[in-house]
Length: 159
Image 1 (cartoon, rainbow, N blue to C red):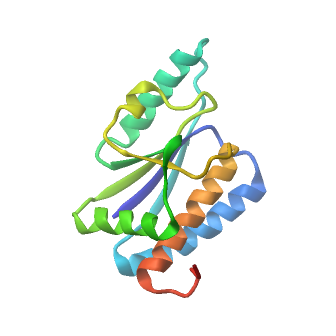
Image 2 (image 1 turned 180 degrees about the vertical axis):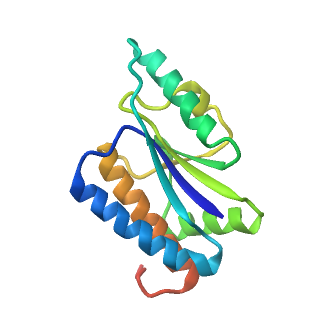
């Protein structure tokens, strides 16, 4: 099952980009034996619309178009918090069900638009704290790698 991270906002920090690339490579190597991967990351420029509602609607439209055929996981502060084991089990259940692709959607500074929030999806919270988008991507890519290690029995994850 292909994994996609679709994010509003360009990643500017080289240190964050290096960490993400490291976990992306690790995920691709570790996930392959259990049918996960490759991991692709696509970012989109923030909308330049004048109002928040218009920006969120435009960004939501772009995210949903890019994720057209994928099962959705929407990163949302009010989403469901999962343990690493439960996160791995969710990915395993999608793959076992024959899902071809899973897309993780990260909204812009204004959050997700109503189209994304109403889409049938898992709404996932990375925690109650507000994270900068670059750091959220780091946490997400690390958790994807961790999920792959859990599913393959690799010793990286020690509960």
